[in-house]
Image (spheres, one colour):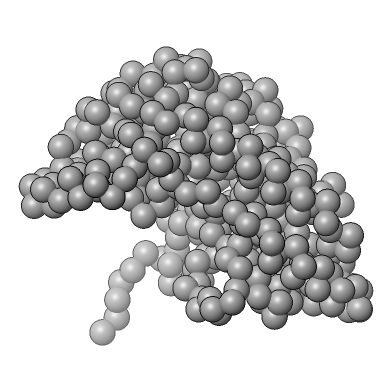
Length: 372
């Protein structure tokens, strides 16, 4: 039997940092980008049990309470109407739908590198041709809006940016994104800003502030990261009013469960939990970075729990970390970096991590230098 799948998939290899690795019993999990301090204490087991009655009927579409809570949460950044929201199963589900809308075989997309690999993997699977702007190691992987603007061409249908960037955790200033949006709008290029980690940065830096100002800006967000609700699989996009009829060309009704629809508004209304989490993350991250003397760190945001660590030594840094009981994300799973790099998510407790990092650095220091 010959399966007649999309031409772009015939010789394509999936790239993702989700491997389903078995974590050793004594390992410290610093891998997936979650809130190390979990979800709001306002969400209780009793509230969860109360949603049991919602597993038989279809969800309460169009999710009026959830939409209202999102708009209330985003209000310090912009006045967003409920109908400007598209609700989906996490930010990845939303990105897949947007790729379906914009990308045909040969569609040109401008992206940074490294970036969220699952997003660019799906773009390539749809047949996109990616133009890459490298975040350079010699500049600690710092984002350069000037290089992005220089690379932008009329043939680009899309620009994709994640802010904060994954894997570095750096926050791109809103002014930089606005510069890019202005030039892109002049040539009918859409700008998708993936703010999966956006709740770890000040809301005032969110590109949501640009959605009502520029008709070409779409912001994708999730409750998986900052709100600590990855298991509820809830995400959304904030869309320009003019784009809503286009978004409605895709089926997307009732994709979020009733359990998620009932519980997520409670989380969205507890701003103090996000504030506390960011304060604690910043304290832990500062201690981790101050402890490093051999490994190098990318430019990164102090309240964002992820950071890119790397070395000039010729070794597989993921394997070294694993030998010392630290689970991270492999550099090879991101375009533009490799085995000398890992992404580390700061854990809740540093008691065991810091001495293990010291042991990692001792091993790295004794390895030969890479020819790169």
